[in-house]
Length: 162
Image (cartoon, rainbow, N blue to C red; front, side):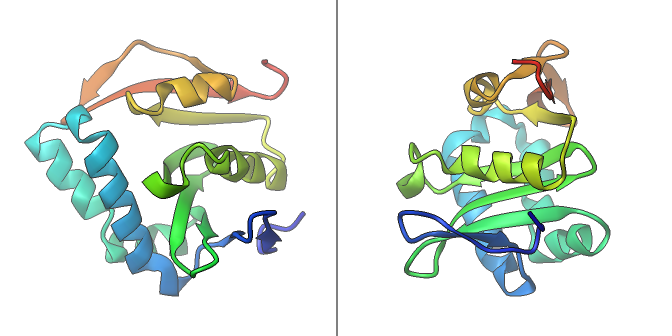
């Protein structure tokens, strides 16, 4: 299943590659959801760095230098989900509040795993994402860390580990 294919979901949403026209909406979606759900994982400097990391310019730079990203587009053309990875590392995975509890994060994660036939995958989980990743058969590889103003826990998924 090629990465560039669009997948039409049963509820009318579309799972598709992130395009250049999506960058501002992605930045807004991730920033809004991060502010709501994980802002407490950052000190002031860490948060400022994260906001810069989410700018359209930084997103574009990552996408043209090797990051792969998918979005979920609602029937009204707004974005409700985003995943970005490079190599075997998830960089960002966010679902809009109105679209949570619909298994969209799992759909994005499974699409990445299946498309790239990954045998292992890493993530630095936020406190809010930790239980989700456990449910997806990720295992903690270290204890909680605070680095560069961000609290996170390194986790790893390995094919057939769950």
